[in-house]
Length: 190
Image (cartoon, helix red, strand yellow):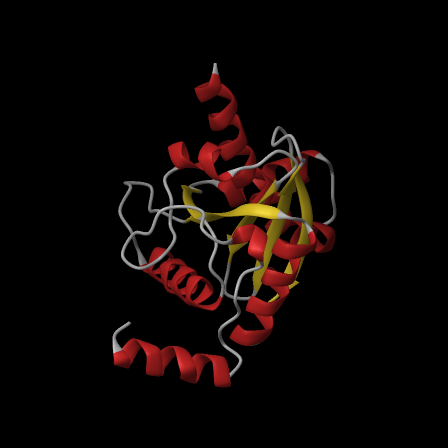
């Protein structure tokens, strides 16, 4: 290993910014630019029976979280993580990954309507880099255009009050993102 990289890894360990994955998550996926970002078509080779997928809708103030069932057919809104500091946020996500035996993270990429990457995509990519340097696991970036609008439409049609909608929109958006991946997997298997 390059001595500079080894020194950097040592600093991260000392600062508590590097966690090693559990034995069940080691050795999976494919590395791209030093990060474990995989393509959707590689997900089946990573997923073992009984494992789940964790969907994230990353935002400035909150991270919406959703979970698949163990058959990876249905996405369910799980929770909304109120962002604090990076280390706290990363530890909370890793705890969820490990407690739910998640095989991979699905993170929504907020592309512009024309498909280009704006400031939100840059911030999401930066978070992904920080997560993957903190915890080693497969991760998929999934187009999330209009996921928040779809989540809001669902909540409005359910006649939910503004305050309740505001609390639920991020986890509903995360479920919408994750369900897109699950639907893709279902249709590609046919």
